[in-house]
Length: 59
Image 1: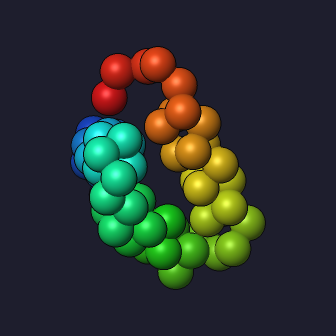
Image 2: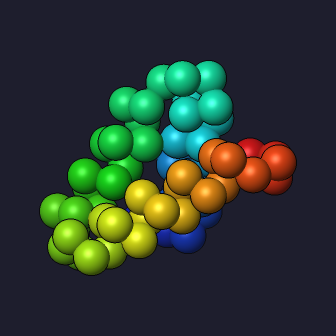
């Protein structure tokens, strides 16, 4: 099982990568969620990641 802090670190890495134009980390994160929790959860994660990348919030 992945801890909350590990999940947050993976999410932050995906945000930073996407802001630099590297989408592999985010795609891998979304695919891992799809495998573990299904398509609906993966779509929720994709939207959340996109919103965070587009925001001014620090990662």
